[in-house]
Length: 88
Image (cartoon, rainbow, N blue to C red; front, side):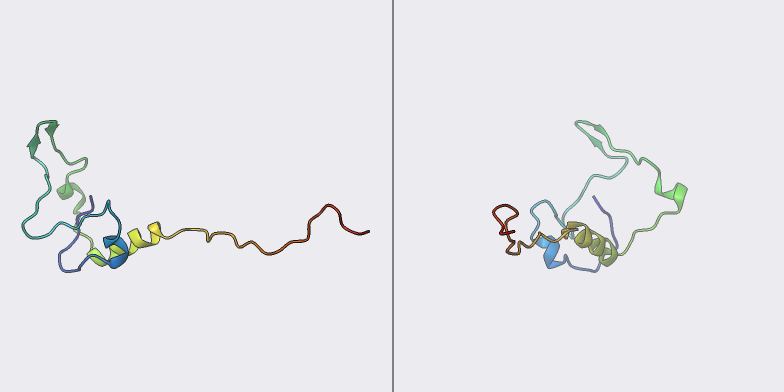
């Protein structure tokens, strides 16, 4: 989960991903100190300790889109002369 500032909508490149959900008004996610049937949710590092602030939604989405883009383009196959059976 990525918590971000409110205001931006979900980019189309991310909206097409089945495993990406943007929560908004009326939805909720459990945050510390919520108790669940599997145990208590806690911060790994409390935000107050690091003076952490929510990042902007645009910056986080930009990083996600960059991650989802293929790093290497698929190879193009050009016609090649076979190595065997060549005339000498």
